[in-house]
Amino acid sequence: MFRIILFALLLLTACKNPSAVRHKLSPDSVPNIILITSDQQRKGALGVYGNDLIHTVHLDALAADGIVFDRAYIPHTTCTPSRASILTGQYASTHGAYTIGTALPKDALKVTDVLVEHGYETYAVGKMHFTPVSTEGEFESTPNILDEAFWEKFDGPFFGFQHTQLLNRHTTESLSCREHYGLWLKEKGLSEADLSRYFNDQFIGRWELPRELHPSVFVSEKSCAFLEEHQEQRKEKPFFMWISFQDPHNPHVVPSPYDTLVDPQKVDYKKYRPGEFDDMPPIYQELYDLGSGKIHFSDGIGVPCANPASPDREETWRKSIAIHHGMVQLMDEEIGKVIAYLKANDLYDNTIIIFTTDHGDYIGNHGFKGKGFPSYEEVYNIPFLVKNAQQVNQGKRCSALLNTVDISPTILDMAGIEVPSEMEGISQKAVLEGSVDQIRTALIIENRAVEQGFYQKMIIRNNYKAVYYYGQSYGELFDLSKDPDQYQNLWDDPAYGELKREMLYQLYEKRVIEEPAHGTSYTLPQLLQMLDKQIDQEGPVQKRTSFS
Ligand SMILES: [Ca+2]
Image (cartoon, rainbow, N blue to C red; front, side):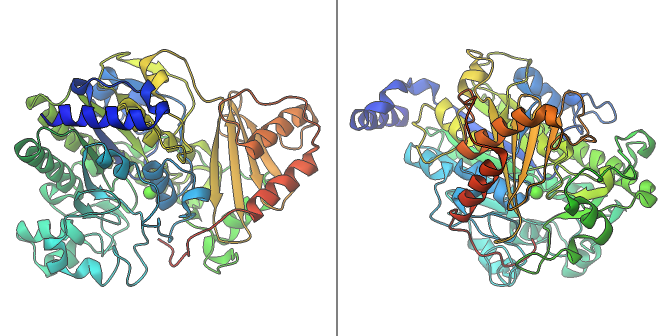
């Protein structure tokens, strides 16, 4: 009955707005949508991307039922802006949460609100991080996260999610055992003394927390509980659920046996090569030599999230990467429980399932750890799997460019809902259905590290990556097909001058679909000035209040 009403409402909407008529929707075809994300996961830490050190059988099976993207990227290098872009379908320069420690405005455009308007029920489970977690007085910071009475009552709304089970931060961090996860741990019998013992900021190694109390178990258990609640109470409605794991973000700590599953000598560790920053912008060497805490920009806090990782500590980075893999293995097993629930309850076939992450991790590669401004592929090129609800193109490998800012428009398009014109991402529906090989000719990545003074934008087109820096004549240009690890900066190579000019023009014009205009008369210095001016006119940005 509800679906008939929904269909009627959609028809009415279509009548009011002629452009919506093209989205003809059969009421039986309204799909459920599940978005599963990990936090800070390397693309290579998954079987389907060629990794045989762990056995991610559930995500590999999902990939076999769906489409694997080899060239998916993120719209921003850090957590909050990247997640906000997934939710809004907008770049950070539009939604305003431009770096970590800022908040997505409550009145921002959100895919959840659009889905609710069209009859969906919306659920959020796990780590969302749309607001700062270290700024006293914020929703997901102290003192609110310590207020158990509040979390016992709170179920939403939260950024358009009608139902929530939340946690925040990472593994052993002392405040990561709060919000709904903290209540769950107490229900399982843990005392405050137990919490202090397990959530002790341990940096690396075996976590003595029992596996059954791990945050990834909380996330899968609460996801299944919401699915069950939905089936019992709201079965006539389609649902959207964002299932968000906090692993494999550091601290790299995991219960036995996941800490020793992988031999550290076999992991992908790209040791810093002396001199590798000689042809890179000077900030690479500064970060490597000084650390982010000593590079001060306008806000005095420093470069968000990127830090040096001395090659002298190779054993530590290898062990961290090995445990990163173990954390993904544990998460995959928990994802398997959710997928088993969907299959057992006849929900799997009509549910679009997307798996991705918010960004990757260097973990020692190139002499860095974390994410941040270094432009290497370990952070930007991410895992991205989609099982659509039509069961077409199963097992397909896809080389089309995709940016996670495309997730919201794609979800709406696949649900037959008109994509708001304010969304800047592009629906990848035609790629998923196989009617075209690619939609994007380019994609853009923004990194405004601080409110004023450091701003980096990248453009990726075919196999080339160009990196522009606000107010600077230097930059980066790489041919990823010949140099995937970015050891040879072609920015000053005259043979690539015309390509660089075209890509910067494309970046300035935000031309990510049409073929770029050739033969424009702008010189390179003019284009750099135009990009600087564009940034000067950008805004508004949200206040940065903390470092996480
Ligand atoms: Ca993150």
